[in-house]
Length: 269
Ligand SMILES: O=C(O)CCC(=O)C(=O)O
Image (cartoon, rainbow, N blue to C red; front, side):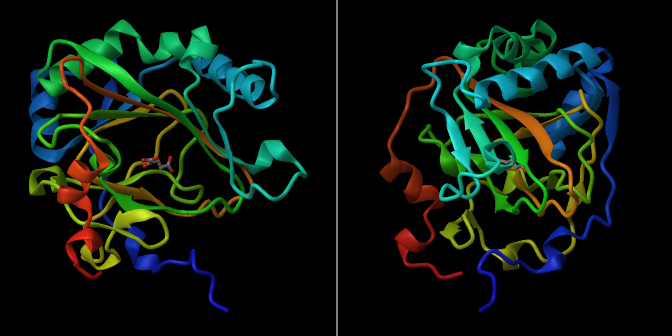
């Protein structure tokens, strides 16, 4: 039987290269305009070697069960008990269990950049995750992050993805399609995950964004993005933080699905 998680290789062609800013200290108004137009900003140096190394130790500590009341671990294959470390796919909701990971999320230079990108003076962190794509780890299909959040549709959400290991095309770095945030909310379908229709992506416009540890990709909550399978024997670890304006209120799943729920409106993919 065909593997239901397999996908067309053409979804991740990577023919196009991203534009990088060298360091978070060098972000100019031109880069902010670039973000407004393209929906992303890739920065090579944001966190230093020490900050990244402590972040990785903290993730291992949380997975090992050292923080008694922490229960945010999701496994790739929940039915396997062997080698739990390699089987972890995601950990969520840890900032109150790790002062270091909290501090990274609230780094003043990063927050200042989020203020500039979102054109909002009071951004707050509302979701924190670590994404561990183990050897052979599966694709995260193309999606818009806003399709996962019960927030008013005009809310500008900024996602920050921080490489903890070298993120490469082989081990499943992020791919984006510039400018797609301008297209507004798109229909999502439950296929390999809650995702965009594959045929939306096949035009070959994707850009792979490899990053060294400490590098960051920031994107608008409506930008189309995804990551292919990890074809290597090494785990690819990353942190992902999401920020929204403090003033915006939670809505409901029904409200969200009016905008993103293709099948809810009877559409097919
Ligand atoms: O880290 C990844 O591979 C994908 C992360 C992502 O796009 C997400 O979780 O929304």
